[in-house]
Length: 439
Image (cartoon, rainbow, N blue to C red; front, top):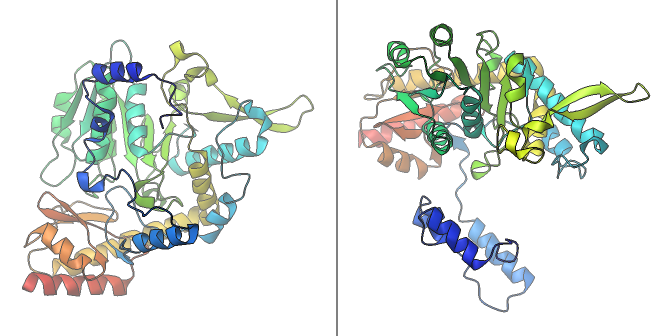
């Protein structure tokens, strides 16, 4: 990147010193050493064909599981062929909104359609398009709620830990205090503790439902408690779950955010993903990212325009409500094509299949000694069980059999099913679990 970064070596050293770092490598300290790579050990003088052969051999060392029972924020769903077919068209592959934006009516219309579909899915008034991922959306959403009198944030401890970390990072940079309320023993939000933590200075309460453990939260109680104290509610949601569950709009939340990856985006080793953000009408001007509106040109023809651009840093930086300036338009288009292809009935069918498979797996695992459910509360397609042996050892043993098991969490295992998990796969998993734990 040296030739692309217009900073002198002295300037870089000053920036590192300000961040209390000794080198650029320190920026990647959080990345495990075994996951870092500085280059490929290839002999000099290889032909293109020889390099390709070595790269393919290296890629073949990756293990791809055909049987996956892990979610925890990223989910393996079937993606109809039309999603890739449409979004692979040359004119859509680089769909960053250009300047002047209005010259690209096709791109603007695709964003407008995405916003419309997200509002229909969530029951909210307005959607943006869009931020980097679900965790970023959560962090941006709680900052939307701040004002002069309300400066604190409360997050339920049942939230995905990665989301909590991102929210804390965003808030720390602005001096915004964040309180995390520990979950109850049944893996749901502790409403009494939540209410007790709400002072007059609380701006936002963030609760995820279904939560990290798969439990469906009592959002009506959360909304009532928060609104009674003058705080706004930010709800994290799974878009597929909305095929069965009540929408954020029906529960009167102020801002709804979620990870859009289940909507036609492959797992892709963790990204790029799609941060969904939608809100009530009165909060529209605080939404970061882009909003495309429909209007008419001088001849009366329908057309699309970018609206409320003054919120963004590239127009009036001193007035910006967010430093989000990019736009996950290609990911948003995949979500839009997926929603159009599936329709309401298709989304409901995926949700029903996912939850039915998860409950079947829970019943079968429950018959294996030591695998009892940690919570008796309703869940969607994820659930946490105890584990009679070391969870990491069990997961490794199942991986050697070609099965990606659930995620080890708090000494147990967080299991997940989608429509991709057949009954045969579930029976094979349970048989393998019995054999491994019987040793």
